[in-house]
Length: 130
Length: 130
DNA sequence: TTATCATTGTTATAATATAACGTTTGTTAT
DNA sequence: ATAACAAACGTTATATTATAACAATGATAA
Image (cartoon, each protein chain N blue to C red):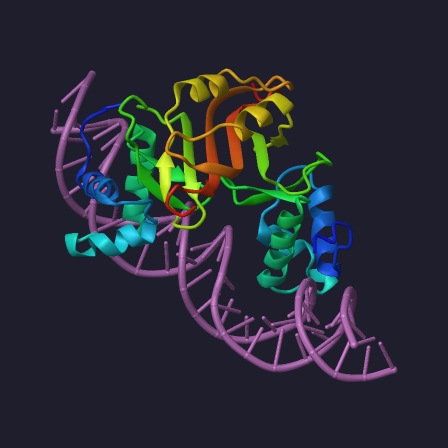
């Protein structure tokens, strides 16, 4: 369990591609990029993605159905994610702001729900596109 | 523009269903529910959904590809949304917390991005499921 | 060894969403 | 009222995203 380091072959391939990418990648675009490496089916991509998410190596941008590598070395398990998303150029930036993270992690719903995890997505125009 | 009140026939039908539902509804489940009313194609659903979102009548739960009615009468345009989602029973609850909303609305990204909108999704176990 | 468990490869299919087209309805200005 | 325009409609087809199911392989541990 939580074999934090060892990635399987397919997991490594998928992670490499996501890490090299400049922006979020979609599952099928990953697939097209690895067909030369002998990966032929969506399942193989989605399985790798699932594990990488579990390990906190990547995150899913829910509003875009796309995946980005995690930069903040400390989020072993991705339970507190925040992103800024440019609506023009589609750039996505992971926000690692301790205060924000603490504020949200300690946020408690009135109706007695205790949170294990959150995902926050901000939208706007990035510096360049403004 | 922003004819805030008048909904078209299809928009009204779709909104009614979402409002009556106990939890988030998926587009195709809405579709199956309105085929008796003469709506036959996904496009008709998705078009209504898009408009209803624009008007702030409903919200999309991105992590579930599902739609819920907006309860807080003041969010004419849904630019600041937050939800609590139970991972067991799938219940979704809209969070309207003025402090949270202000905190996030005024949150500014270091890299000079100005936000127009955000969506926050909390996950955990609701009171019942705990 | 044998049992167990994660990973792989593969085929098929399900679920979610949009494109493109022409028609109809509703609104606004003259 | 009617012309002009915008919004909504209906329809067919297709694109995109994601999972089911099954058999084989490899790695780990009792």
